[in-house]
Structure formats: structure tokens, C-alpha cells
Image (cartoon, rainbow, N blue to C red; front, side, top):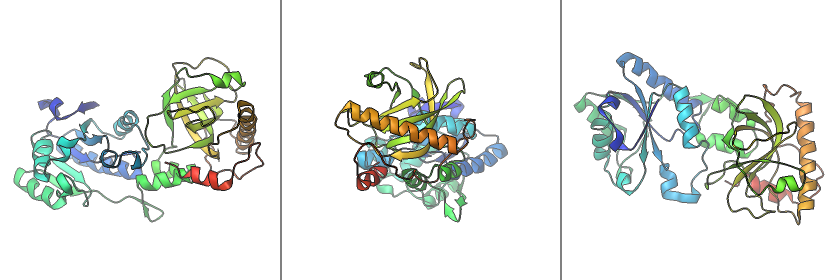
Length: 345
């Protein structure tokens, strides 16, 4: 797998490919179908499969914090694209220079001069170039003149509905991790390396593995029953908080994970976290003692959930189809606050 950062890093070895263009956020089953379609032409033409992505994603460039939250970081996206057959990823910086290109300039600079594309697969509603004036018809016309094929992607549906990143985000916000896994073709997960933080969890008897998150809108926010997987492949039931830890006034989002059946040092290790069920939204408590009481309640709920799901073997993830029903909690927070938090980000 070759990751090429910017047009200036393209070489002759990267030219002559089958290409597709898009955000590929989440690399869900719809994206996987596109990659399969590309692989067919890649084999026919004996040409490498190249995926063109943008960083930041165009909607992030234009909308900033109002853009939809990401399902996957770039690192994870590249890994998933590789796993589904991509041999090259061209990552273009989406900036004023790129956005100012006309549709024809984009085709000339990126597809013809840059990649020497042999075949292109994009959605028939794909728009590009300054003011989004470039379209599928322009690609077809230029392709005929420059002898590369252009075809539209095949729509992939589940339950008679198109699979999309937006649909995945909606299901995540609703706590339906089972349906999310069906759309992704794998369980949804968060990844990162454990870092040293304030270590407040230790002071209240709840040590946590802290994984910093990018300062972007959060796909998930709240407290969840999760399965934590170490780099060794060992899995543990756990409770995780995703957000800004309002009780301690954190400025950056963090994924905090308390492993229920583990003791040891995790600093520096990579961790994969699989959310299984949503327990509640983030709450600001009056003091650390109140927070500790609520955390103990969350742990008890998570233990009951995993026990009821017969999840003694963590290889089979017990994914819920809805948030866990409300129980009497040690903190006083309203259903309205919790519901609002479920859709935050």
C-alpha cells in the first residue's frame, strides 16, 4: 500500500491506474462494493487500484465544527481501504488552491497528468471543481477524448435503503450498534494509544486508560458498555466515557476506558474499543464523590449487561440495538438532557 500525500509526490510509478474518488468515511459496505467494482477493472487492466481522498474532507473545510462527525480517522481509513483492495491512496489537501480548480483543471491535473488514470469509478451524482460545476457528463466527455473509461458506482442497499455514512451516524447516535455493524460489515470501534493524563481516576479508585481524540465533532458522546482489545488480541469487558469530562473541566475530548477485569500498566499500548451498549449521556457532577458513586453504578449496569448477554467469551461482541433502559441512578439528570446528548455530534 502506497499513501501519496499531495500531487507533488506522485511519480511515474503511480501512473496508469484504476481510480475512484470520495470521502470513504467509515469504509462501509457501500464503499466496499465500490472497491470491489474497482478491483474487477484493476484485474482486467492489470492496473493498481487507487483511491483519491481529501484531507480535510470538503464539508469540514467549508463547515468547520458544523460538519458531520467523522466515522474514521485518516489512519484507520487508510488501513480499511488497504484491507479492501486499495493499492494506492492519494490524499489531496483540500485547501483554497484545490477548491479554486475548475472541473476541467481538476481532471487534467489530478486524473490525467497526475494519475494517468485508465478507468474511473464515481457516483453519477459526483460533483467537483470550483462551484461544483464539474460532473459525470464532463468526466465521460474528457474520458472519451483521452481514452479512459468512466462508469458510475453500483448502489448498495440493505433493507431496501442505501447504505451511507449519514445512515451509520444516525444509528450510532441512536445506540443501535448491532445495525451499525451490519452496515459497516464489522463492529464499530475506536482506536488510540494510551497516554498519561491527570490520573484522577486512580484517586477515586477507578483507574482508566485515556486515549486522546482529535478536536473534531464527536461521533459518539456519553458513557458506554464496551469491549476493550489490547494489542495482544486479549479482550476485556469495560466501561468507557467519550467526551469532555465536564466534572473535571477537560478542554479536549478524551476516550476514558475502565477495564473491569484487568490490572496492569497500559501506558503506551494501542487499544481498540468496541462500544456495545449506551448507558447514559455525559453529566457534570457536583464533586468527585458523586462522580465516583455514578461510575460504580455504571460499572454495575455494564457487568449485568455483559452477564445477560452471556459475553464471557469476548470474541463474540454483544452489540445492543438500542440504549439500555433507564435505571435509578445516583445522579439527578433529566431524560431531556440525556436525549440531547445522544444526538450531540
